[in-house]
Length: 183
Length: 423
Image (cartoon, rainbow over all chains, first blue to last red; front, side, top):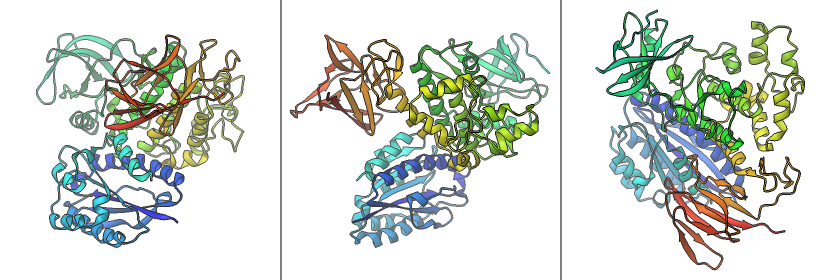
């Protein structure tokens, strides 16, 4: 039986990400994509699906439905405005709540990349996420961009300091992803 | 142009000063001086030509953003103030013992070993991976940008003044022969065109020739701008394109490439065929990232062994025969680590992770093949009986079938399984 595994990528698209922050993240994603494809080809019975949420002034689905890894093309994102991280968690919660009681979905992989901290309310949504079994069991990885990333909030989301990486820790990022994806 | 005199003091942006001590060299772009900055000896690159405000601003940004991780880059550390319209930047001094890559291509300098050459390839890829992960593109990658140590393969990347934020407008296009087809045809260099140039550099390093210069390119009557655009830009054909043989190396003209191509494992040749395929030549997004090159080069390094009969450095091959002396070679043990399978021969260095520092060595001690822990941390080795022993740094363990060695390097766990070859 084919099972589904969702990979959610939450990307800070606030104004401060413009330039070196977003370019750096682009590069991380471009390094990750071939590895995801490699995992997919070695595990055809687990369908990896990608969902991308961008959060700037508002949070929006960039890749609105779970696109298969083989068809996913990363084109980079425009950045402007504030950091609606809380809004991104709301969108994530909606999707995870749908998956939570569906036996065909394996525990998801959640990646969040940000160079700052939330400018909207996020605590309540984060508490709701923590009530979902699939959020609790998910591998949660944060990519802190630059020196001003709000590591405290990222730690609240990932649950651990050791799951927060910088963009130059690409080997560690890929290791954490692959540890989760190889079933 | 304004040349500087000995003991002249150049004010730096941000308040420091550089005192000129000596001239180190000069080239088309400018003069490099030895300077004293706060009692530290450094190098000042001083441009002949007036530089635009955009260029100067870019250098100031590079100083502010700082270098990529590691110590491979001779990065701008300070920019100078404008003096009579002239300008320069200060970087670390290049240590002794490193030679320009072009010198190796001209055979004026040689690598001490195949291993050193592979290490150089790995470090070039690693440097550009780190540069790109920082959000920069290099934009002018060519044979004059690297200095390589012939015995260690250590690499220094210089001329970082054209580095910029990826996607930003650049005044530079690159050096003919290294520019990506889309740049030759009028586009601007970026991370993806860097990746084409990197593949050219690697092809030069391993095959000693240009990947697009074969019979067809040689048949052009004269390398005019029109033909240059055709060969490197509009209709490039890889010399070993499996679907198009019109540009194969001419054995009398392109001797190096014709001779070297078959010497390397298939995986490297396939990677070049993919990277210089019609698809990748014309679709920059299809080009592989540096990590994929590093995996291929890791495969080369894993399979590079000293023949136990003739001592030559050879690539272990499925035929288990030394290509130099023709004698059969069969390792007593293999090691499996993640998806890699490494033949164990005496004096083989093993690399678990990507930091290019050896983590283990296979040694014959007291007539017994052993693995030596070269890493700074202790390993746990577990045998088939389930008993575990701790192997401290610089200690050796006799190899036995099915032993599993566990180690943690840079927060990543590695598991090496030892497998005895069945005969």
